[in-house]
Image 1 (spheres, rainbow, N blue to C red):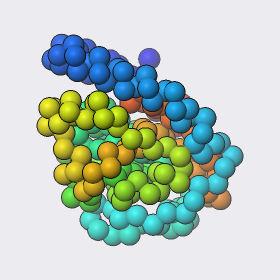
Image 2 (cartoon, helix red, strand yellow):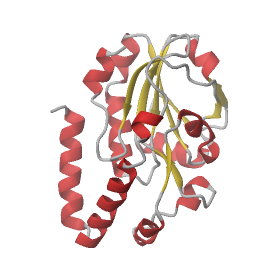
Image 3 (cartoon, helix red, strand yellow):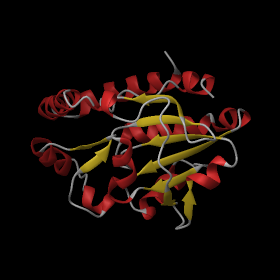
Length: 212
């Protein structure tokens, strides 16, 4: 078991002891319903070319896939937002392994639908040294086939936990990206893919680095 998986295991134990059973059951039901959507199979595949992107970073600067790929391979990480403790763990763990990623000639990029102010917040909170980009209304994630809509029955529980998605994403569509990680070569081809609708499961960073 990798270190990130161990950290997630501890987080699961902590949340299980803190959250009411009703909330845990609703979140579990949400995940089970999402599994029926077959997003893993229907999303962009290994061997496909990703569309080009032009997205704002945490400081309001436009970052393009074209300029990133001039420097070599790109790791594209999609996360749900600052409010997601699993996303924070994953991004922090990737930061801890950033030098190993860079040694293999890859550029790490993280993408979420939240506005740049929140991207800046997560950058500063976790001392991230890689670009954190804003995918407004999930337009780019939608092109990759990795988006889903939160079910109506789960929304009151998000609000009850103080998670206001409008504050983060500045829309009311309740659409989020499935946590996903792609390795993209200089020709925009996907050479590695991790995607799991169960947001508690995250990429094996050792496997990711070996894929570079």
